[in-house]
Structures are given as structure tokens and as C-alpha cells.
View 1 (cartoon, helix red, strand yellow):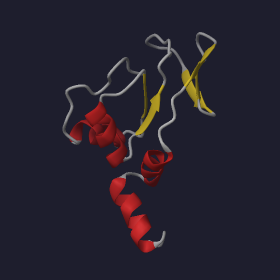
View 2 (spheres, rainbow, N blue to C red):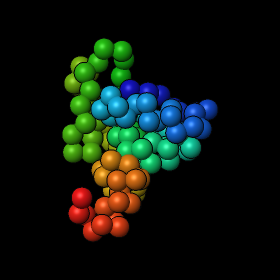
View 3 (cartoon, rainbow, N blue to C red):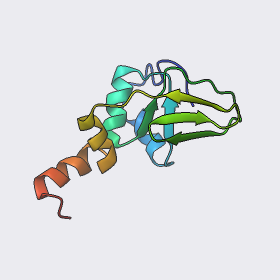
View 4 (cartoon, rainbow, N blue to C red):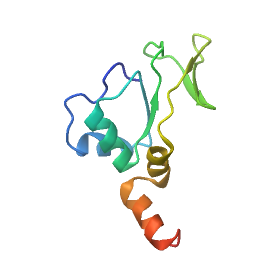
Length: 107
């Protein structure tokens, strides 16, 4: 869970890539522009949830495009990424996505 403008000041790719190795899904009210693009490029799973309400220790679930705060019993809408950007994340980042396009999905 993060607040507003997550990743602000993080213009280097390493700021996003160091989070991908943990298998995290980062939920934030919004993301800084450069961090957002770097995160997409490295395949970091992100959820934009402008109305999220959560405190440290709350149990959070992401189900069917909604964020649920299980602890508080509340659900929140998310802002989906454009399909092209989500496809890059789903492929594991820009390099695997491009490789998949070039090879037609063959490994």
C-alpha cells in the first residue's frame, strides 16, 4: 500500500526493478509518471486505487478489478491501465513482451 504520487523522485529503473523480485503488487492512489513507466517496463504489478483507505496491518485483497480492505470491510474501485500497458506487465516486462511479439509467442 502506498499513498499519492508513489515513486516520485525515482527516475531510475532500479527503483521499480528492485520491487519486482519480491513478487509484490503495489497498490497506490496514483503513481509518479516516470516511475509508472519504469514499473511497466520491468513488469511490476501495480494497482491504481484513488479512494483506498487502509492502515498499517490491514488485510488487503485485489479481486476482479476492485480492492477490498478485509479488515475494514470496505471495497474500492480501481483505475485500469490501458490494455497495451497491462499486456507488457502481464508478459513480465518490456523485454519479454517484445520477445513474444518478435517470436510469435515461441520461446
